[in-house]
Image 1 (spheres, helix red, strand yellow):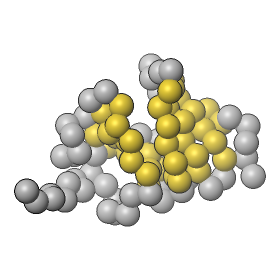
Image 2 (cartoon, rainbow, N blue to C red):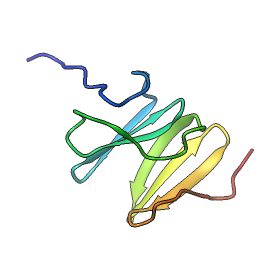
Image 3 (cartoon, helix red, strand yellow):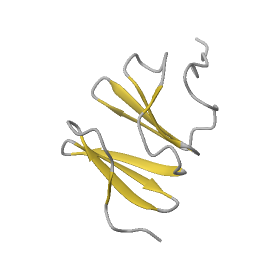
Image 4 (tube, one colour):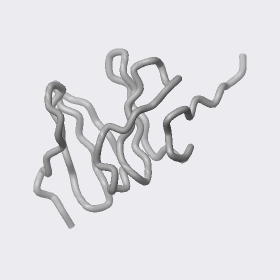
Length: 88
């Protein structure tokens, strides 16, 4: 068995956090959150493009992103990220 690099759509291959939820993958990078719907073969930007993402968590239909400048959240059916009010 070997590992295969699947960075198609990622601006770089330095991923700081990676989580799986159902059939989705989310990656946190220096410039935002990226999402894959095909097991990591391709990636699309998922917001917070100017934020260094350090950690991700999915709980109760909400995706949380901890960045160097605060905590953000996005409900599964929403299209925008909201600040949780923890900016530095």
